[in-house]
Image 1 (cartoon, helix red, strand yellow):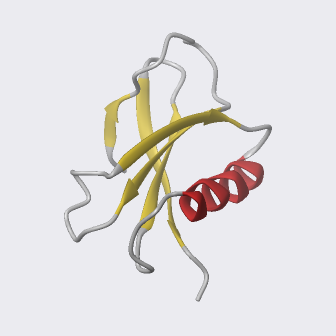
Image 2: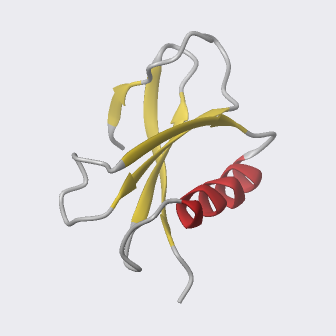
Length: 84
């Protein structure tokens, strides 16, 4: 699992997510970053897909979804791809 800093003012919750939208092979340079809350991981994945679809970019763009760990960090949760 990858851990990175979760830039947010709300600490101590586990229903916050970050989506790094990537449009080139280098995942460390996202085109956009979105922070959002969701009621559960399944809802977070659905919301991440909607956010990914809303960003302009190549058809092969994808998103790296991170979950807030409750201590100010982020844990990689899933990789979201646009449906074919």
